[in-house]
Length: 204
Image 1 (cartoon, helix red, strand yellow):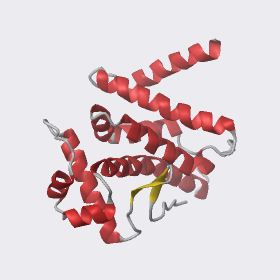
Image 2: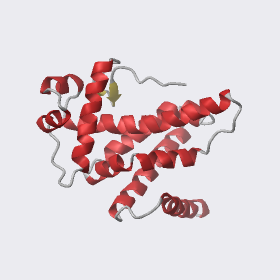
Image 3: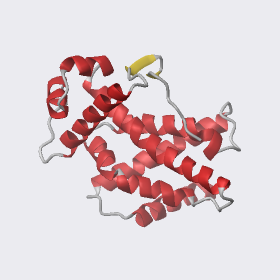
């Protein structure tokens, strides 16, 4: 099952980027996204600008403005692609498992592996004060794949809204604490900390 996101991403009615379903535009957007990641993860990260991103990516300013409105939009695209890739990968696993009559893999293990592979991007966005970008992208991906991942939840209900908001909030809180504590905690540690906090809620 492959999800296609269309030609324009919108949030609260405002276009964030304008990447057509075109190989050339996707390639340029990927170059700009990779450039933003390198800048975020550099020893002395600089403030993102159109000139800096274009030079680092090797694309023209004209190309930049054809795809994005401002530098932060590249970060939004990067975060969207990251969470889409993680959840699309799990949906593909479900498809293969069902096709070959196999057991469906543990979603938590797959999700944690996806986070490990993208830990640099996640940490870089948090350090640069862009945790809101991560949160929005996470919620967008959860809603996108909800019919497959959470078939028992009706997207029109309050419960679904609480579910999405709380899941994204717990993720951002956990990753923020992970960055602020020197990225020492393992995934097992983080899972244990979250479980203990949720236990307080359930027992209250």
